[in-house]
Amino acid sequence: MTILQTYRYPTDVRGVLCLAAAMAVALCTMATGCGRSDRSPTAPATGKVLFNGKPLQSGSVMFVPDAGRPAEGEIQSDGTFQLTTYQKHDGAVVGHHRVAITCNEPPKTGVIDAGPGPSLIPLKYNEHKTSGLEATVKDKNEPFVFELTGKAP
Image 1 (spheres, one colour):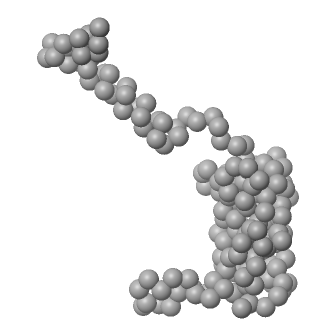
Image 2 (cartoon, rainbow, N blue to C red):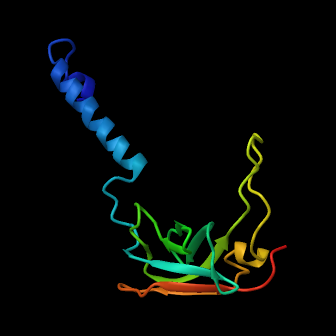
């Protein structure tokens, strides 16, 4: 017996609607990852970025784990950052990370689609593979401090 034979239209519309609603919820859950338990555990991770001894006043920090989802954080005017992986400020995946830091001049005002301005730090820091920066995230962490040096390009 098929589903269509089990629920006869129009006498059993409620059954068809309940089945359709259950299928919609299942599809939504699969598509959005709701209820997924395969997320890597995270731990709060904060820190500060210095460039030639002074706090970097803008930009972003990315922690790229050996396995799992990367974490990102916006650098505040005092050089501090808080990382986000799955939801705001939940930290980074526990384990070893390579780190990338970017900081660019803001785009010129009034220019449409200007994109980011020139980098304010050496370009090697823009990629986690070339930055030479690493961090190990544990269940509990002291603030990470990254001291960048050199000349902007």
